[in-house]
Amino acid sequence: MTIKFILNGEDVAINAEANQRLISILREHFGLTSAKTGCVNGNCGACLVIFNGAVSPSCLIPAFRIQGSEIITLEGFSQTAEYQDIILAFARTAVESCGYCDAGKILSAELLLEQDLHPSKDDFIAAFRGVQCRCTNSEKLYQGILAAGEIRQRRIYGRSL
Ligand code: FES
Ligand code: FES
Image 1 (cartoon, helix red, strand yellow):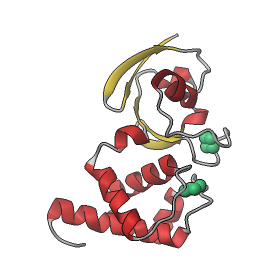
Image 2: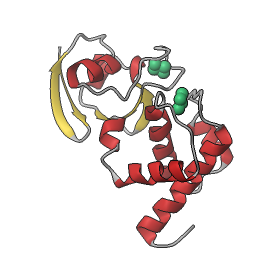
Image 3: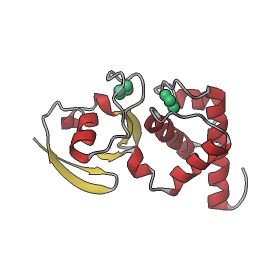
């Protein structure tokens, strides 16, 4: 089947099997490898993308659901000022990373910050429920996200929270 959708801001069209999963389409058709193959059952978060505005496991999304959708991968998000806010904050707060779950960790951080630049611990825990990270201390990650919110606040409004 022919599938048309928006990928990282560009209109694209591909031929795919109806049940082919988004993660393999991203990797095989577009060479986008930020979404990693982990559990393949929606539990680990290594394959997360932003799908129609929500963080979603690309290993669970079949091709027929992609039709007409808008998808942002970590590769696309990494071209933004918002990405730089998060990366700078994670570096300053020494958030450890092996890179394996960066797509899940960074995209989940972004959607959380879009809702609240100073998220509560409960909101942080809820936002990261779908990301199983072996490397990052949870409290340090929360501090990193608060730091990213501060950096963004200053970048946009020129003042701290
Ligand atoms: S590989 Fe998709 S959630 Fe684990
Ligand atoms: S940064 Fe290594 S698994 Fe998350």
